[in-house]
Structures are given as structure tokens and as C-alpha cells.
Length: 374
Image (tube, rainbow, N blue to C red; front, side, top):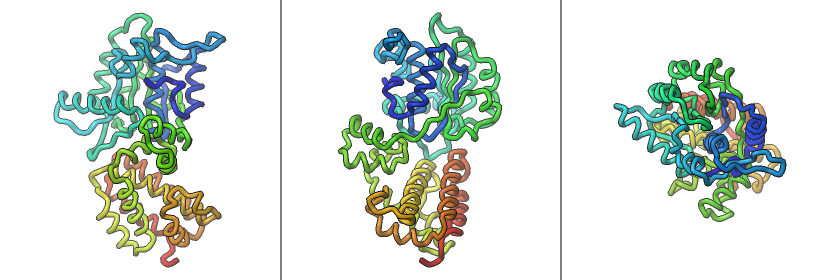
């Protein structure tokens, strides 16, 4: 299993948790926040292992520095079968408890196989209130002496407000020997009352070198391709993995670029129509992936506009076309506004807004900052 010191990047997050652990001052509730695919899930499991490891590793001063990764509790945690690791994850709509259990099992199987995988669905994902109720029921059962229970609510922003509100009592009065971990891309999506009761730990984008190494070592991706995918990944191992898992990623990126280009070269109504025709409004994960690629294209436009060269940009194979598009944006403020629109739309999608209206609004906003002629 992945232990704390084996997690790529996130040096500050690991340091905070280890220092608190060795001073016996761990918080009762943590909020791990930051982009998807950067290690929030892995760190939650690694902390669970450290809390319950039978043979933890120590430094010369006698401080515990990591779980062993091989004892019985570590093995159970890595396989997501530790009895006192309680996990709630977002799943699609379901007909009954049996189907819900199957969806949760499928989600956990994917995360067990690849902890950094970003799991998406063509359907809206939410954390069912029944999951929260079941966890609260289980916390009423005392764990064995010496065991530290960990409760993980993964992608907490996908829990409906009414359901999240029901967790306040659990967070306000956590059971003994229990650590609650909430994860979210943006803490602002959670109820203020929940935010105020959790210690926040920011998970930052991972360095390109660490991402490339992960792809090379675990998936035998050739070094040159691993470096290219790390450039595209915007600091997320999970995002890089989504690129190597697609059978025709080059075609997907080209499609994303064609739609992006239409916003620059077509009239507003025509550009919006292209967006509507070429993007599947029923696949939220695919739409988010396209918008992430657009952020990469826009970053390249900024570099080309303000002194960068073809070597510096991420999408170097599209350099000639990107240079033409860069000429259609006049001011630095226009780049900033467009980037804000893209980021805000991604956040809105994660809040399960309707995809088509959100994309239409995005198209019209972006067009305001693009010159009608080069």
C-alpha cells in the first residue's frame, strides 16, 4: 500500500500530519482540499495506516515516521477491508440498497486498483444520506482497544446540503479514538458550519517530474510520453492517468481543440452551436476533461502572446494554430477573465448544475473577450 512517505508531492501535508501525530495532537476532523487526483485519497489511507500500524517505522530520535505497509492492519487498509475504516463515496442514482452497495463496491474496487484515479460518470454523483446514516450507526459500536477508527467522506461537495447538515452532530461530538476526514476540491462548496469545525490541509498540484515518474514506474509509459502527459495533467496524477487510459487520447484532444478554436474563429451563435453539437451533455466527466484541456490551451496562448516560444508551451504540436488564436486576445485582463470563466464552470459542473446551459453561458462569456478579427 501507499504510505505517507511514498506519496508523490504533498510534502507540507505530510509534515503537518506527522508532526501532529508525534505530538499526539491530531485533529478530530480534517478537511483535505485541492484538485482531484493529487493524493487526498492516498493520504487519508496512509494516515489510517499510521494510526493502526503494528510495526511503525521510527527515526533515530524515536519519532514515528511512517507505517510499515506490511502488517495485518496495513494490509487490510490497503485493500479497503479494515473494519474501522468507514468510507462514504459518491455514486449514481440507484433503485435500492442492494444496487447502492454494488455501486459503492465498484467505486472502491477502482480506487483500490489505482488510488489516484478520477472516477467519473455520465450520471449525477452524490453521497447518499443513507451512507451517512449507516456510518453514524456503526460509530455507536465501540472499536477494540488500541484501534483508531477513521471515517472518510470522499468528495464531500457531492453530498447534498440536507445530508451534510445531518453530519454536524458527528463532527461536533466525534466518537472517542476517531478521526474524521472530509475531502473536497474546493472548501467553499461545503457548509460554513462544517468548514469551521475541520482543520484544513491544502493539497497542491504535483510537480511534473513526480507525475512523469509515477507514469513511468507504475505503467511503463515511455519517458518522452510521460513528460508530455505530465505537462497536460496540470499537476494531477489522476488527470494524467485519464490520458493514458484512453485508447484514442490524441483524437480526443484534437476534438477539444477544434471546439476551443471555434470560440475564436466563428460568430458567437455559430460557436455556441458547435459547442452544443460536439460536447455530450450527458457525460459530466468528459465535459470537465475538455474544459481542463481548454485551460491548457489558454495557458499556451498567454505564453505565446507575452514572450514565450514553441518550446515553452504544453501543446507544442499545436503551436502554429495557437499563435493565430493568441492574436485574437488583446489584453492580459481578457486572458484572466476567460480563465476564471473556465474554472468557475468546472466548479459548477462539480456541483451538478445542468451541463448544456452552463456551456452556453460559457461560450457567450468567452466570446466577449475575443476580437472579431485577428
